[in-house]
Every structure is written in structure tokens, then in C-alpha cells.
Length: 375
Ligand SMILES: Cc1cc2nc3c(=O)[nH]c(=O)nc-3n(C[C@H](O)[C@H](O)[C@H](O)COP(=O)(O)OP(=O)(O)OC[C@H]3O[C@@H](n4cnc5c(N)ncnc54)[C@H](O)[C@@H]3O)c2cc1C
Image 1 (cartoon, helix red, strand yellow):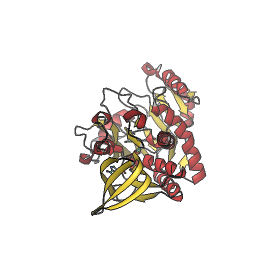
Image 2: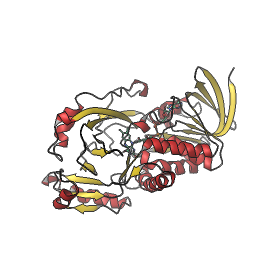
Image 3: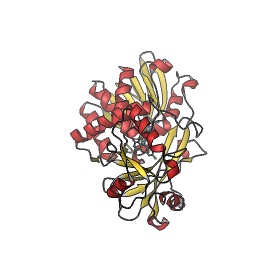
Image 4: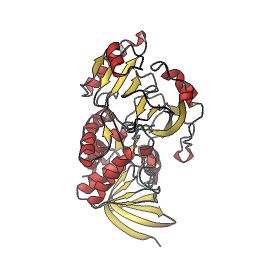
């Protein structure tokens, strides 16, 4: 027989976004339970990203990504300051490497300004050479509000904040069914060989790559509210020597992606990527996170455009992450999809789909928004 428990709110998924939402709900006085199928929090996409605090430059005006990134970025810097989370506002260079890219920087600066990112500074070739002597560029833009973060420390601080306000995290707790009840929902949870039922008025589906799977488990949710899932893998290559760069370096975006760019971690280690590799099998259970050995060979000719000294032998295959998308390459501007009761009609239920980049940067703003949908 199943044990039966109840609480006010359940958050499914202990990644960056789920933890931020749980903290917010707990701070609002709701007895909150976080359910995570893995052994620890943050073992999926939240552990497989670039750890960049994005400024909010490229996203379509008024999109959720644009709004939540710009607000989330400010909230995140303030959170890192007040909670001692490792981060660095080191800034990013966006560079052109060919005269035929001339108009692109003006377009990027305009899109950024439309999103409320008004701090981009134009850079001449000479200024770029002063900032990054090893970089080849025709001209560029400097984004001073781009930074990097220790995402694991961040998640630990979010969990600590949630727990301080009475929330608890159940690990190895996999949601397997969700039934609508007269006063909320009954969740069936498989837990380390056993199972239990958890009753709650509020259910937040923040299951990342599995959000469509979870939505499909909700007996009362019409299938038209479960969007398709398309998976796009991103591979990284690691620079196997000390980085000559002090800033993040992005070539101007190309159709389909941001280009193979350079990011740094807080230890100064440089990595290149992620690229965009659409997976044929869109089942998250079938993901192979191994990085193809050919990645250094693929990346080196692209990197050489802005760093002529790069050699394939200086790169090793790194790690990978997978973007949970709701459409394929035919829709490059797809947005976050956050469906609350006003969309599907189920009180207290929120489904978060396609929380890809800039989900880490946006997490605190998303949490505010989600809490608003169920309060
Ligand atoms: C390659 C790549 C690079 C990125 N770089 C950046 C970046 O630099 N900056 C940025 O802002 N964003 C970046 N992102 C986006 C960011 O990583 C994600 O938006 C964020 O981590 C999403 O967090 P999440 O909590 O929604 O999902 P996840 O971290 O995937 O967490 C979901 C959790 O739900 C759990 N779960 C699933 N099913 C169940 C179930 N049935 N029962 C219980 N638990 C379940 C999973 O185990 C998992 O722990 C990047 C993403 C990728 C793929």
C-alpha cells in the first residue's frame, strides 16, 4: 500500500529553474516539496551548460527570453553578491572577422537596445587588440554586463534558501502519474524501490528535458497542451592550455546558432562551443552525452577565423548538453513556453517547456513569474 503525504506545492525537477521556483514558493509561505528523480539535484542540463550570465542581447523583442534574461541577469548578480555565490562580470566581445559582416554589429546593438540592453560599446580594431592581443577582429562590440557564474554553488544556495523557508527535497523520487483531484492533484512517486502518493494544490512541472513526458502524465491535461519535443545537442571542446583570453569571445551569430564561441570558467579554463547538433531520436532517455572525437577537427577551422593561432591539437573533446526545444531548425526564434492555468484551465498547474538558454540567467525572473501564475 502507498504512503500518503500532502503539502501545498510540489515542484517536479531540481535543476536551476525548479530550485529557484521552489525557493520562491517557500518564501511565499507555501509548504513546498521538490521531487527529483536523480540521486542529487542539478545533474542534467543545469550541470551541462556554459555558466554564462547573459546580458540579453540577441533575443526577439518582447519575447519571454528577452524579458526574463534582462530582469533575471540583474536579480542573479544581486543574488550572487548577497549569497556569496562565485561569479565574475568579465564582459564579452562580439567580433566581426570579415569586411562583409560590416552591418551586423549595428543590427546587434539595435536589437540589444530594443531589449533594454543599452550598455554595448563599439570597439575599433585597435581597442580590441589592446583588450585581447591574440584576437583577430575587424571591429566589435563590448558587453560589460555579461559574466560567468559557478552554477553548482548557485543551485546549492537556492536549495538552502528553499529549505530555510521550510521546503524539502526528495531525491530518487520520480513522478510516474498525476491525477486531478477535487482540491488539487495526487502525484504517484516511485522512490528508491518503493512508492508514495503526494497530494498538493499546486504542481510545477520544471522537469527540463522531461517536461513533455511529465505533462503527458497529467490525466486531466488535454494533449493539445503538450508541445512536441525536439532535442538539439551542444558539444564543447576544451582548450588544453592556459587561455590567452580574459573575456568571453563571440563571433557574430550565423544562421542557426551563435557560432563556435569561447567561454571561460571561474578558474580561467577556456572552452569552445556549444555547436548545434539536432538529434534524430527525441527521447531524453536515449540521449548519448558522449562528445564525438571529431569535435576538435570540426571546431578548429571556425575558431581560426578569430584566433589564428589555434591548432586542432590544442583542443580536446569536452562535455555536452542538450537543449529541450519545441520545434526544429525551421523555427530559430522559439521562445520559452510557460503554460499556467490561463492557458490550459487547470488550477494550480504550471508546465515549463523549452527552458533552454538563457534559462540559467533567467531563473530568478522565471521563478517570480511562475509564482505569480499560481498565487
Ligand atoms: C549546451 C547548453 C548551454 C547552455 N548555456 C547556458 C548559459 O551559458 N547561460 C544560461 O543562462 N543558460 C544556459 N543554458 C540553459 C540552462 O542550462 C537551462 O535553461 C537550465 O539549466 C534549465 O534548468 P531546469 O531546471 O529547467 O532543467 P534541468 O536542469 O534539466 O532540471 C530538470 C530536472 O527534472 C528532473 N526530472 C525529470 N523528470 C522527472 C521526474 N519524472 N520526476 C522527478 N524529477 C524529474 C531531472 O532529473 C532534472 O534534474 C544552456 C543549455 C544548454 C543545453
